[in-house]
Amino acid sequence: MESWILINKLIILIYVSSLSVKGNFNSLCSNYIVVISLLIYVIINVCKALASSRVHKLIFLCISVFVLLLCSYFVTPIFLILLPINFYEIFMGKIKFVYILSGLIMSVLIINDKIMIYEYLGSSLISLVAYYFILESERTIVKLTICNDSLKEKNYKLRAKLNDQIEYKKQIIYTSQLQERNNIAQEIHDKLGHSISGSLMQLEAAKLLVDKDSNKSKLIIQNITNVLREGMESIRFTLKNIKPEVEQLGINKLKLLVDEFKNKGKINAKLYYSNELDKITYIEWKVICDNIQEVFTNIIKYSQANNVKVNVEVLNTLIKVEIKDDGIGCLRIEKGLGLSGIEERTMNLNGKVIFDGYSGFSVIMLFPI
Image (spheres, rainbow, N blue to C red):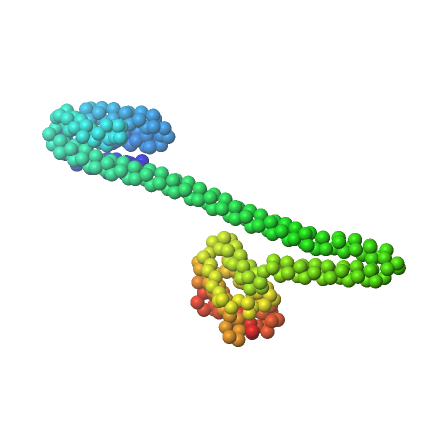
């Protein structure tokens, strides 16, 4: 705002200087006094612009008005043209525009030279309009600043809330893992523990009877064998129930990789897959996840991409995995350690890798079924 006021004053000052040079009005002293008076006015307003506090600015404005009144009386009435902009600076924002304008128009009555009335009124009107738009711009900037600060605060709260939700999600996962471990431990203790402890007691009894009553000892040993066999079946059943399917383990690990990539790289990533994932073996899932992890690292480092698509398709005779981004691409592909590692891991499973950097960058892995 300060700069716009100075520009407005500079324009009016140039106009006043031109009037003085033309000599359209009778001067009370020689031209060099006019120049000195204008310089004094300029110095006062520069000091006002450099002042830091509102009180100091107001003091310099009052001094400026006083100097203009003295110069208009003792030097030339031309200095009155500079008066309106100083009035606006002092009173604007504290009283209404109508009162200011009315006071300025009434002050025209003190001007003796009637020719000055038009210049004075023109200067007052121009200064009023300019100052009005300057104030409106300042109010708009203040409103936008407040709105921006409010949006920043809301964004901060949303981020904090999101972090809390992430922590809560992690806590739920950790608690679920602990609960699952506790259930497994309890089930093993209830079934396998009792079976083994009972079998040990019967074995001690069979040991004592083996010389005295061999038939009874054999019967006890047979019972122990049946109990242990049932215990082993129970363990197999328990492990079979708690162990996830290969496709569930693989696709969930892949989902986790995609989510971590989105959070880490700030890149939009989407995962697509077919419904016949059971044809993908455990070792193939491991290679797929390791290769995708390497591709994600390269995307963050080099691609400058905004979107990434991961697609896992199970076709009739092969498994197709494609990772494609919309980055800058690469017409000449140089296989470093990362790309060579992807190729080597895939070839170990009789697979094939296709690198394409024409439109973005894509990596296609093909595994035979």
